[in-house]
Length: 178
Image 1 (cartoon, one colour):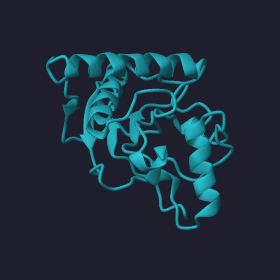
Image 2: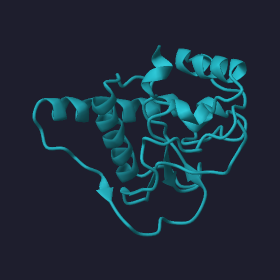
Image 3: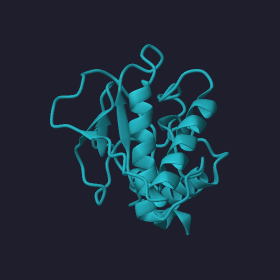
Image 4: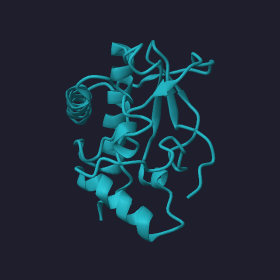
């Protein structure tokens, strides 16, 4: 697939407000091309295989939701509010699509492009930082299933802070789990 520019389903501002731009029934183009992907993950290996064998496949179509959090990777780390909003989106998508919340279903930009996006969304120990978001998403999912209040992210219709973005990938589409 060719690069058609950048888009995301949701943009999350530093205060945790979520600007939804593309319905999840459509693919966003948030990852770009595969570039030295993290093939330690089985789910990424499946995306790489499909990309290599199907010229019409777009790796971005493997995802339920692609999220960008505003800020500069390494200079402005994800805020507590951004992490919470991402965890909420992951938990709700996990319930909607009946997917587990694991490292195999939650990807970072760096998992698909470790060359140009190696610090995306975190510098330092990315796995530990992502692990905390995954655990929070699991806790939110459990609360929702136990009858808790749905912690909807703050939806806004305002301009998001301009600048580079970082992202945490949400759950994969069901068809990549076959």
